[in-house]
Length: 138
Image (tube, rainbow, N blue to C red; front, side, top):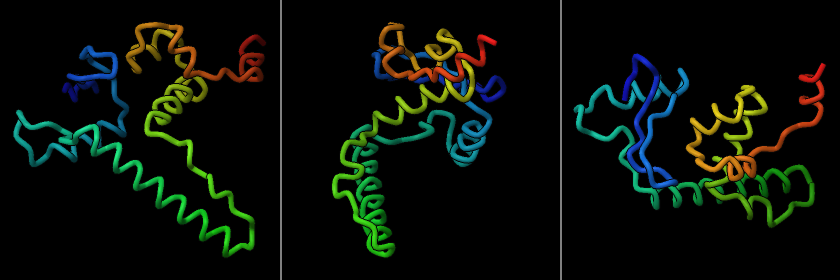
C-alpha cells in the first residue's frame, strides 16, 4: 500500500493476477482508520471471500425485510421477489458503470481500476447512455 500515492496492491484478484490499483480519497481515509492499530505485516481487511458473500446475503435479506415492512405500512403491494437477483458481483458491475458514466473514465483507465484484461469483457459491464454520448459529440 502506498498512501502517499493513493494506491494499494491487491495480491489475489478475480483474474488471478495481483496488481496495483488507485484508490479514492474516501477509500484512503477508511484504510488509514483501519490500519492505525495494526502492524505493517497485518492485512488491512482480514476477511475471507466466503464470509463477504455470506454477509452480503444477510444484508440482502435485511433489505428485503425492510422493503416488505415499508410496503405493508404504505398499503402498497410488495414484490416478494425483490432483491432476489442481486448478487455481490453486481457491485463490480455497478462500480464499473459509474466509472464511465459519473467519472468519465476512458476504457483504458477503467480497465486499470477493474483489472479487466479483455476489453470485450469490460464492455459487458458498461452501459453507455446515448444522451451523454450525444452531449460529448456537441
